[in-house]
Image (cartoon, rainbow, N blue to C red; front, side, top):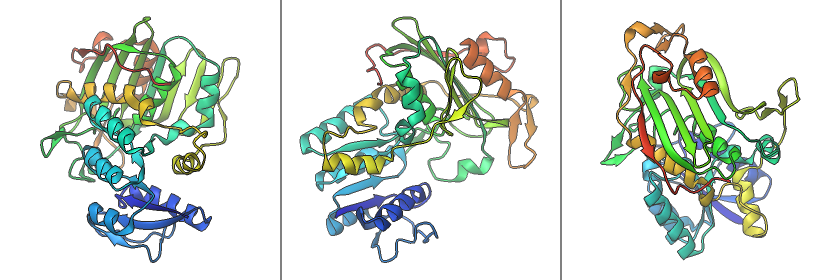
Length: 372
């Protein structure tokens, strides 16, 4: 019986606790232990009765000796905990975003190779059958990524690192595109196949007193001139779940709905490969490929690092805001139409004459690995 432990059992860790509860109920795993700095209340979907609880991950590793560990802690803590997991002789499912920089990415890869451990990254949308079907058509042309959500001001009070650029002297990946919309960026890089971005142009904006962005526009240009343009926001009065468009094809990635060229409407494509299940299958039979190995995420890490290192976001002033009907924050008038326009045309807001826009920041990205 494979013994699995979870480090970071609170907050988003509940989603992993549910998976652990289900797999334990199926007899596939034994839950070795849970860890969090704060007490975690049992949930009806994941009671995990009798499972040991720890507040120090090093104690959990020493006492329970798990075979597999899931890490669901703030991104800036990932590397140090992952190294401890490898040193304890366990395989790892590491939540996204995996690390803070390409240098950390290389260090993590070296540690996994040196210890012979298996490493899967928590981009669960990569297990989508809809994504696989889209990629199988080998779509060509520029790619547009769109997403428009609403997050109240309290969203940035959910954790000490929320909305911050730096915590304890380390950069934090908590901008709109590199955290809540991270799956959109990762999927777009995969859909682009052998796309190798040479340059990144980014415009970052905020509507509230935070250090990072709640609205992000990014244009990646490849060696062949192909472009990926992403336009996402967390201050929209109109909901756009998240779309990746290439030519006439559209993937609504959170819902696994797909429309291929020649089709009239989006259709649901059932089936997602669970990342922990996939890791367990790979442990049993190495010929089963991992869905989200670390190497597949190098392009994402490079782009995320460049976005976070870019200048501080510009403020969208009160003149362009209206109160959200639910209170606890404001929305940008017309932002849903703007993100669609930017993703569709490839023109950033400052190039389209948007009155609150500011010139973007350009970063060379030569040599970034392709995501396949």
